[in-house]
Image (cartoon, rainbow, N blue to C red):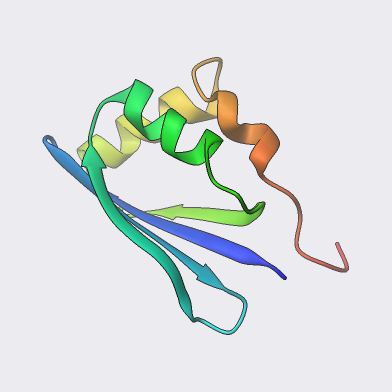
Length: 84
């Protein structure tokens, strides 16, 4: 099964939602918007993600810059969608 994550990053909290390929919500949580907390959340997921989408805002840009470089240890939790 393919899973996707959406994240809305704000200064204090980030809202995260994991859905399956049919759009069914698998998990929905709010976590502190600290890099360590966000990385730990993705590292501890029991599913592999095909995609992580983030709301576009200044704080989301910060998160992307950290995750796309050396800071985001959870990139091994991502896998391409089937057929790619």
